[in-house]
Length: 285
Image 1 (cartoon, one colour):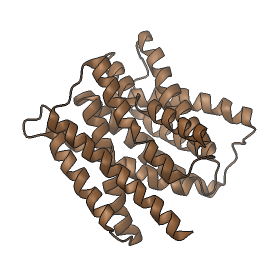
Image 2 (cartoon, one colour):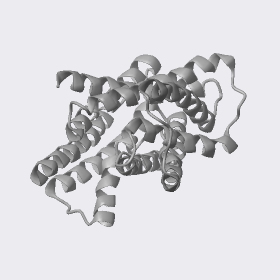
Image 3 (cartoon, rainbow, N blue to C red):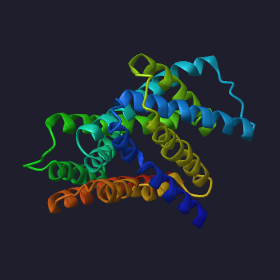
Image 4 (tube, rainbow, N blue to C red):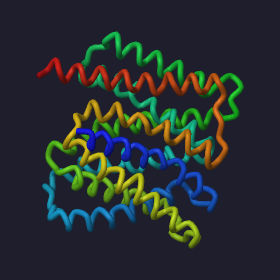
């Protein structure tokens, strides 16, 4: 059990490096589309070898391809491109905190699509995250309205990512689901990609594919064999903390007192949603 929690922590730490790699690659003049394209290309290669070693076949029902086309569009093409773009026009800290507005959208989507009840905990988490966004953006924020809008859209696509992932793993192994999601995302990215990249950017592109994409996902998948999803989700909220810490150490990014309070509200609201999900799981048992 303890090893499972360690794997979740390590996976979330890997995900916390996403914005860091995006910031470095922006320094090479790469567009977000190009960053994501090469990230997916290298990750597909690594995952393909991993599936072969594990003896997991690539076969899939033809009827499932339409689902993975939709999944790849929202979770790879839109989600990561929006996230990286937000990083390039603002900061790693700002982008990762707006990414964690996803629980708000999950609550709203759950209410609209599945008629889920709005419990006191969910309502409180909504207030916490919305208040946190106002504090992070600030009255005298140096970040543009465009950065705020794209950051909030990142949170929306992240929420959709989570919803679609639940449908994916019902029929396919998690690794196979990731492979086909990446594959369709790769296809959507081709028309928008600048294939010529500086040689110096290649180690960063490979690192982006290996650490937060391939290794992060494999660690998290192994963790779920020992830890319940709801508990793992709570531990995984260490991701923005890691991202903010690395952004401070590597780029000197600093948050004001009000922004730190906003960050605490956003992360706290996310944790509260996951705690509620855990209680609902127990109630259904």
